[in-house]
Each structure stands twice: as C-alpha cells, then as structure tokens.
Image (tube, rainbow, N blue to C red; front, side, top):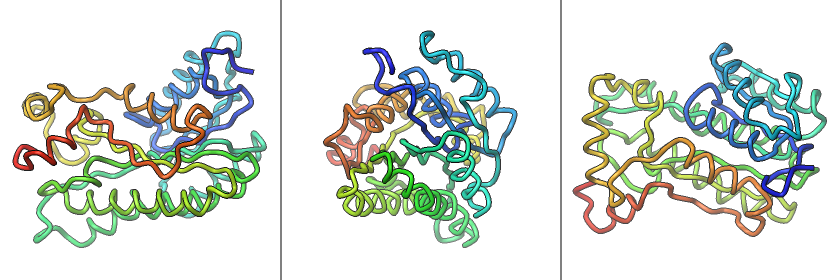
Length: 275
C-alpha cells in the first residue's frame, strides 16, 4: 500500500495519453509520485516517452520502488484504432486491470474559421474528441471492474470563445459534454468522470500551433497582464489537480468541469475584451 502522504495504492494502474511532453508528462510523473504503482504511457515519440518513464521511476516513493517493468510504453497515432486497441489490451495483458484513464493527448489548431481548410477541423476533432471517445469505450469494461476514474484534459477554450481558436474550442467544448454525459452514464457503476480546463500553460502546444519560439515571451507577457493572478499556469499545477480528481480523495466529484486558470474565466465574464 502507498504511504499516508500518497493519494493512491501501489497496485493501481493508470493510463496516460500524450505523455511524451507537457501536461501529459507532468501528470504521469505526478501519479507515480503520489503512489500509482503501474503506468501505461502513450504518445508518438518513443524516445520522449522513455524519458518520461525514467522520470516516473525516479519520482515514485522510495518504499514502493517502481521498476522498469512497472511502466509500459505504447507509441503510435492515437487516432488510429490499432493504437487505441493496443493501449487497452497491452495494459490489461501486462497489469491485469485499469484503475485510472487520463485522456490528455490533444492537437492544437489556430486560424480564422472562414479560410481554414476543413481538413483542419477533421484532424482536431479526431485527436481531441474521437480518439478520447474510442479509447474510453475500450477501457470502460476494466474501469467497471475497479470502480475507476477518468479525467479528460480539456481547455479554457471550451468555456470561453477566443478568436482564431474556433476549431480547437469546438473540439474541447464537445469533450466537456462527453465528460458530463459519460459521468451520468457511469455513476451507477462507481466510475467518476471529470475534466480539467487549463488556462495558458507553456508546453509544446503553442509551437505546434504555429507560434514562433521568439514570440513566446510576448505571448506570456500579454497573458500575464490579462490574468487576475498576473501569471500563467505551470504544468505541475495542472497535474496536481488531475491527480486529485483521479484519486479517492475526490470520491464525491463527478461530471465536474474544472477551470485551472488563475481566475481567467472570471475576467472573461467581467470584461470579454481582455480575453
């Protein structure tokens, strides 16, 4: 069993998608640190996933002693059926159960809706919504056995509209509705389903959305000024909340959409022009 300072017991198994960098990597490390004994981490970059694996092993409680064999890597395109099937089947084959599913993998998109290729819409919906639905479907039978929990990584863009983030916001708003609909369906089985809705956090997402690296300092400065807390978020702050929602400490929370944004969504309500 985990020590009293941990959220989880060492026999628990968590699946974390998009774990090669950013919030996914931070969440995998946080779960290991808080006592989850076995992990399946997924993404497209095998080398980066190996780095995450080693960080998880290092972060695990010393009395627990997470081993190389306690972390399974599944690399591949999350939008492909074969990858989703492999994540579910390899996890159960290796560990015999699934207690926690963290749907973190996501794709950015930016640009005016009017001129954006419709293929961009298809891609962002495939990654941010369809892949989540499909992997969740495959994991639900195991989660019923363990009365497990699901946490989906959404976005503040699901709650507040932003110009030039239309396709991304649509995909995340749909993800939030999926979260709440599924929470109602699975509550009778003891499975909790929640979302986190982070505000601005610097990860590879900005660069993948086309933002030049040299523009990041200006972006951060503007974001800091617009936020009532006068700063952007940190990966660990998001990971901490995900871990809490996944744990039994949040045993009476389901269907929750959780902004983690320093109060940014409140500013949007007060004065939309600064959002």
